[in-house]
Length: 117
Image 1: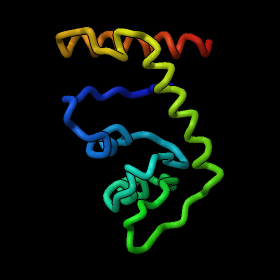
Image 2: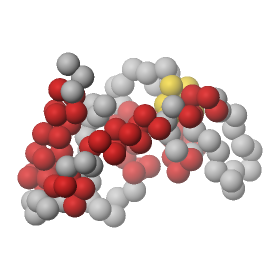
Image 3: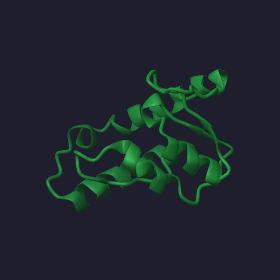
């Protein structure tokens, strides 16, 4: 379930914003796709006491080990994004202003959280 939302320009890469989203979170593991495999990302996770579960990129000179079983649970994260984009307004970004789009995303996140209770 989404707990933080960071809205950026469309051309901003996700990997550059991940450390800001991780800041202050307490977790045992960080599950991420191989697109997030960078020395900076691994160092940020370790600095916060998280075990990075990120498969190494194919061009990494010294591949890191990772827990393959835990990595399979990453589909839960993908399902959260799928549920988030079920609203047409979020998936197609009909809102012209950033503040309106952020409000739609926050409202959708609130509905996702409400399904838990």
